[in-house]
Image 1 (cartoon, rainbow, N blue to C red):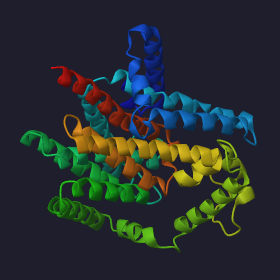
Image 2 (image 1 turned 90 degrees about the horizontal axis):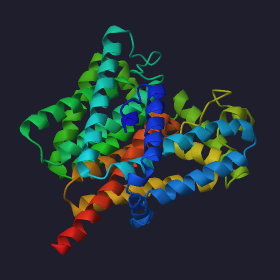
Image 3 (image 1 turned 90 degrees about the vertical axis):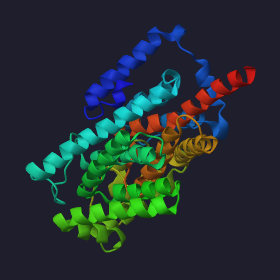
Length: 388
């Protein structure tokens, strides 16, 4: 699963994912494929059923697209989707999931350090020159920071670690929060806020007040060093802000696209080509690559069937994670981390089309698979315990 820790180099990640698939094909007979069947039958429909429906709707939307040839280029998404079943098949033990999560946190802190270097030494940090870290776009960078932040918050919310581990986790949290604030990415800020509130509320209001106060103070100090950040915070709820108004115009265009082809959408990749047709007359931009909202963009490109299956996938993953938290036991921090990430990712996705970002999608597929793997591990333990 090394393709998950090399998303900072997408070409390398693709090579490693391809090698993993070839290895699985070579060792086909030796792998426990009963895990796939068990995951298919899990509560809430599991995560494999909605993924299968989503991919089927995706294929139909390509075939029924305004331009199937152009839309067929998006079929590469099927390659990334292999991440989820790969995790289900290969991550048979909770320690394996935990090691993968540790690696993702390390990657998050590593790319955050690159971003801080860019801010301090390379002239990045203004709204016109936002730091991208090692990625091609600052939105990908902030999304990776957000998901890593959720995994660290989950560790801190469950007090079962040594003092040394706690200090490491607090240090990781400080680096991730500081860098995320400096990215000026409002959607990621809102996602992080949702994760903080949900995560620390899980441990009670006193912990919530303390951690929220510390993060607010840290953000205020950073913003004082970079005063333009306060204006960015204020603009979140400002309907006259040009980027906010542009998103409203894109949402209206997306609704028109969806109403024209409600079941399977106008086709993957067609938003960029057909946006001028649906664009509101007062929209600031004539052309856009996407609609800056995962729900709106998914419904427009892939229709209500694709959108409903996406919602089913996210809700099923969240409910499985909450089920593991309720039952307790080994891997609770993984379940909480997955729950926080699903909530944060989708809150941020209301204002940014983050699901279409390959790097973020691969991490999310791992986080959606984690509760399914915990459920499988629990089912293995319980029968053996009853037998004993």
